[in-house]
Length: 468
Image (cartoon, rainbow, N blue to C red; front, side, top):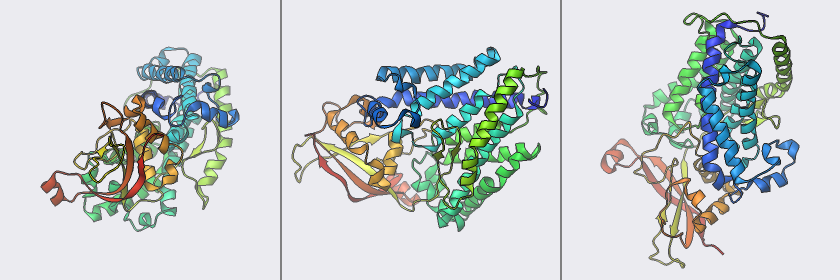
């Protein structure tokens, strides 16, 4: 059935699946290394409590059958092992049905994690990985021509990611319309990277060009994904180039890399590497894939309508399996950067001479002399949520006091999420949290002090607190 599969995308499908497996690997390792402090049985937002509150139909997950930290770790590390093997090509060595089952298991394991992740997994790239991963199940293996309808669905996902992000900007902050948002964004983004200081110090006319180019790539170029080759491939290339620019300018977990992976699926590599002669897809594969595609198209009506709604939602899932979702980022851009600085003291009573020692985080700004680090595509969940908490205490209502409590207890799993624990011998007697205004230093300040940041105290976020 030549109408069903397209040999020309054989290499693109292979590269897409191998790269997607690497993203899965990073996601599973991130989950395995951080879950105990965040959602473990003794974590800040324990999974068992969540499962008691939320009905099964709203959050399908393997952990309905059983939860323990050991079982969660087994699920996460199993996913990491299967992802690494898929990246090495193991799934392509299997018969078609088993290869599909392999990708289905990866999707099911990660869905189980996301649906108990609560606040820590409320990011758009979690749903994007699940939506993309579900489509990967139906692409077949290297012995089958990739189904055309699935290739188009992957482009539809990429279109929604880019076009949705473009629309949410135009409908949101006025600085996107007057081309001034990047005067601030590189400084106020959630987690600046090693080059963000230099990006921020680019001349303002360059920032305006950056913003205008962003609008072109997000609002104009995605439409070209649905045109014939080589135009569609060129559009995908422009998206890849833009995403690499974002990779250099900040830390956005695996969002940029997964967008690049999606764009690769739209590239026709056959003029460079001729595809092998592939057999016709078996009838059962044609029937199953066609039925799944029809179902996804029906479900896709709501995110399509969302794109053209005046109340466009950003990063919203329309079903508990995250099969179709709405995407978007930075509908508004902060002009000022605030950071929470967490400090502890050994003094049981605060006095005039009390010495406060600062905890260090891995990714978020703290020590003004510490250069921002590159962590993406790895996702530092606590650091990201600390950025949200600095914007508004409402973002921290469910988890912040449990976090402080674990610092006062000297909880090892929580301390492993941090870069520096100023109390290695015993936990502090009290912890306080202060809100600071951070800004990048000027070139003159950088030369004079060696500091990347300048910070000014604003107010107390949490008064000195001790265990009861």
